[in-house]
Image (cartoon, rainbow, N blue to C red; front, side, top):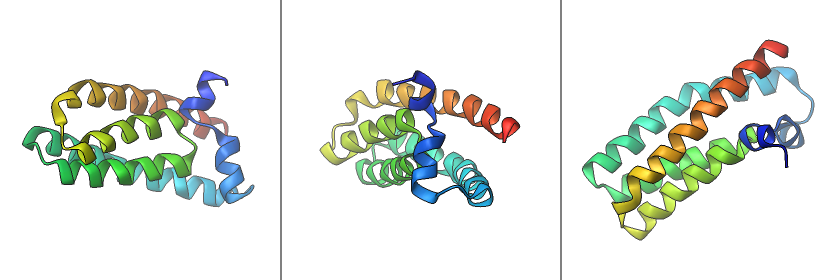
Length: 117
């Protein structure tokens, strides 16, 4: 699969919502609005060692990323969710780094996509 489609796959988003540009823009806006809060919750949970909070925030971000067609972000959030479910946050920092890279890539690709749409 094309690496850019792992970052953001507009075809996957279209499969979910159809070819509705207004709904597509609304979902992207909702993701962009909600993502910082979830990322802050994930960071806070890692810092405080709160596995339940990590699980919840990462699960929510995973679902949002999946709905958007952002596979890399979904997978990074899934990794953090799994750490929270397992209660072992020892690998939290590498997983956090993966999420940060995935989100940085997604931000670039979504900006480019919005400029073309």
